[in-house]
Length: 411
Ligand SMILES: *Cc1c(COP(=O)(O)O)cnc(C)c1O
Image (cartoon, rainbow, N blue to C red):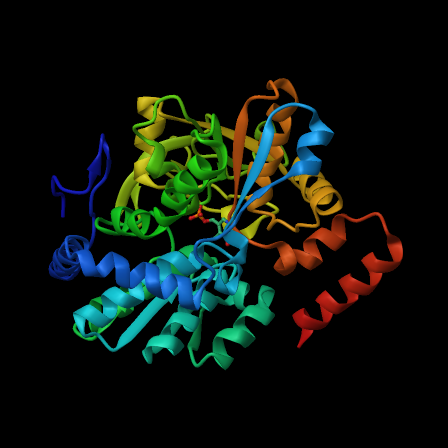
């Protein structure tokens, strides 16, 4: 299906099997109706302020600001959302839409498991049946998240096809949806996939930037100079950026996973490296990490949530128009950024979020004291205990924590 709606420059669209076209049209119609219903947004913000932690605080990072001696650094605290990340904004919004549509079941795919836990949480809250598709390899790697999804009442289906990871789980979820769309909604986890998902996910996440704008005007009486956000699929970045698209003086910076360095080939930098090409996959057109023949490459990042082959078509277009600039931070810089933020502010950013911190830390010392920057802390880092411990120099803790991690893997 190629249609004019849902295009961002030359990116986006909806390239899906014939059977799903009617479902996507129905979803688009329901979404536009909800969007133009003034009660819907207030129902959404009221849900988020009573069930999650909205508005999330805007924290002045006084110690980091002093340490770098340059720009004034603020942190937008999406880590304080229920289930620990901005993902709650998207899944709870889609939950309200499911209720409007009268559907009784939700499905989703998950790689690292964070989106799966968020969807299972939403399904429990709204009394929906829930099936989560997950590659068999990821099920083994993410035992604690699988445990929580099941306790929350979801059925977790290990996918045994192909590489048994995220892309195989996506295929399986699509197959389920084709057979069950009458009763079932597919809760996509980021601003990717066929139209209307990129627009819809961005709409729910835009609450981040709207709040930030209000908080900043209240605290500083003006807009920030630069905003930094990490980019996996692109939803937290679009969420914080979108309120500022028309404020040309606000620089917007997206930070991708530079992995072991762009030159190493082990990364997930689709918009900040020369390794990506425009293609159509997973229902939409964007930059994918693929070779000249269109073969998808292996992606890599220390942060599971950024380890993604495609990227939001909305961000791909914003790169072309120049409104958003894209960079990459390496694993090494990211671990250092986590360590510094813990020591200086008592805050543990998720490894994903720490990409934005790492790049902001590179720039902060070079900026004047009257420059204001905001880092979007998309999530909290508790979940990264094993990875961060692995990078620690403290031998005793390292051995203890790694042993626990092995325990998870072998049971
Ligand atoms: C999932 C996740 C991301 C990546 O997703 P986006 O759609 O790019 O925002 C980033 N940070 C955290 C904490 C996540 O859990």
